[in-house]
Length: 223
Image (cartoon, rainbow, N blue to C red; front, side, top):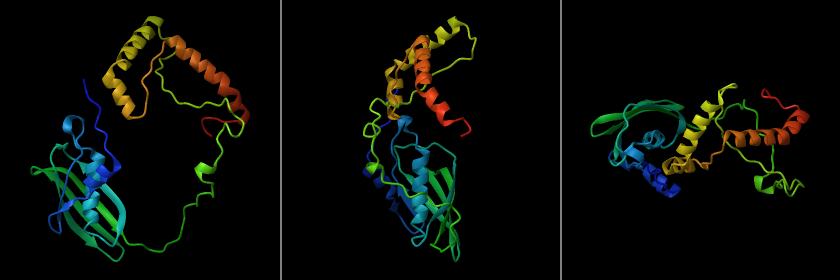
């Protein structure tokens, strides 16, 4: 049975991004232990960017390209070597190499830019009220409005009933396993199962409830 990954707080995550600086070019970062002790790609990439940023204190990150070469072991720290590639009037570029026990785990290039005045080409967002100030559906008079999301497994039309039943039995057995339920819970999902008939009933109820509204407003998949 596989245990769910450990839950860490934001403050614990930020501590791992505060790299230990050995000298002007070398940094050391502790990892967050995961299932199987694999190093999280997003986490080591963030540490690589932090290491590069420490060598360009007066400029902000502009872009980054990371190449993950090896998994590494999250139970041990990672060494980051930063090489200065360019320092221009506006942009700076750094190469970052992450190593563990001498093996390269990651190679990355990050660019940094100073603040410059430039024309705004992107359309500005509309002036919207704060989310907390928007009345709820119940406050607007829609007391029976319930919205939820769910996921289901579907087979092509005409699939023989015994095949559908066999697949359904296997899926329900899988969802009943604790490690599967724990894994889904980490993503904020609740593991539930139903029969093909119950799913068909849910689909019909959803269509009857939302179908007229969708047609009335003229909503399509291309909208």
